[in-house]
Image (tube, rainbow, N blue to C red; front, side, top):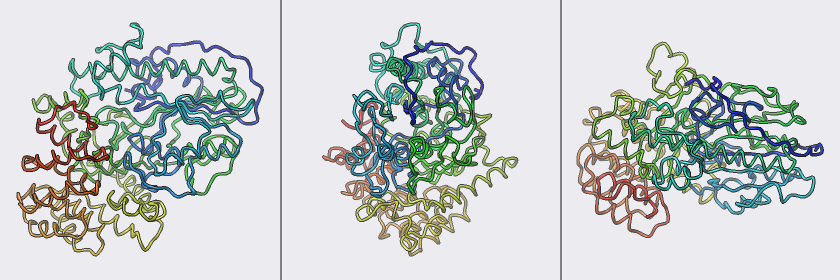
Length: 634
């Protein structure tokens, strides 16, 4: 599928022309955000099977970006980067639904628009992934609710209004039951609007059969309903006489909410549809013109500085993104740096760089597969069907690879391989590109002092006395080069590297030891058979993340009884980060039976941390001891 090729037929829906508003010195700004959607499923990005005429028209009259990327692959980290304008590996907010503080000096960017006289409204999703969220939200918005909009501002007051449409969310496209989807999506579409099960091309990483098509049709119909609602919102803007004084931004919060998309650090998880529409009176603010397509690189940390400059404000020092519009816009970017960390109960760590033509991802926990256990996905019928077909040996090599350990490095040609089916990381012809991308990513990790090289357990401890953002800037407390050197070995498989990792287990730095152990976890079993004494000894490490990882390995490789007992103790830990780490390791051991009773006990505890409950449900579900569709909240 060519994402830059126009669709075969572009449907035209006339938009009513409202009364002409008087020219304002500052433009109104409308954001229309949708959820969990990749460009591959939008008509104006080349999908001839999609039915998105409103989005297509907006793109046809505005500026369509082919290289726009979310900074994360799941909603709350993505929204954290949007609202703060700071990458999550600097703020420490990259783990989905966490509660860590940011410095008082970092405001939600609408705060700065308010200072310039804007009426700021949010309708209505927040999910900003920061501590003291209520105060943070109150400071940013005049109104944040399901009733918020431009209509409550003072006469003539410029507005910044966000509308978040949820109809393309993963809950609609895969997580809720098919009956729920029929009631909340299909029944809201006219018969002629509905996309049938055989009316689209299947992604090659899914088995092409009637059951999978039935599930994939949900994506197309949910996006169609979203398109209808965008049309209704634009009609209201017209009727209020505001269309000709409002700059409109349209984008999705991250990639498509299907297995292998959302939560995964590849192009399908990061890349988003992104359109900016300019009315006649503000066309001069577009450096690209209008009715055009641009391949300029954009990520979500560019949004805050762009909005503040549009409003006429000065940029606070913590913003490092680009200002995209106007005569004083920033220099173009050559590369974008992206990240993907824990999603719900599925721990992970991926760092990514892209130039828009290639995407390079470094998997620091490659023993976790792309289709790893995440309860919010496991309860979806599409994921259950995939696991069923895997067990029945009905999947081809590409489709099976979603459930296998990953390579340490991915390199995809996203211009010519939009579904990312061919990993070029080991192709000699692409070695210069691989090395350049690898070098760029290393420079960014060190320059940013990526605080999420620390395990989440450590982020929690840091947050008791300071913010992760500030901690990472203290050289003596955070020797990032030493830590990165150890982490850079994780996922590189071979005897030579495993010997280096064994040596690093003797380091005085607990985080270096953690990465040494995590790196050993990714080694092939044949390299580890001779390492039993060192692994067993590491079970006694004073730093719990090292001891837990060593215990998981000792149990899996050597059936060590002390390791079994220690894992059981950590599962019931009062520290939820340690409990979650232990449970995640247990999901991938061969012999789960000894842990059934302790996992049942943890699931029955009265705890509010849904990640731990979700991991317990995944563990029991994998053994057939819990119905696959059991929600983690139950």
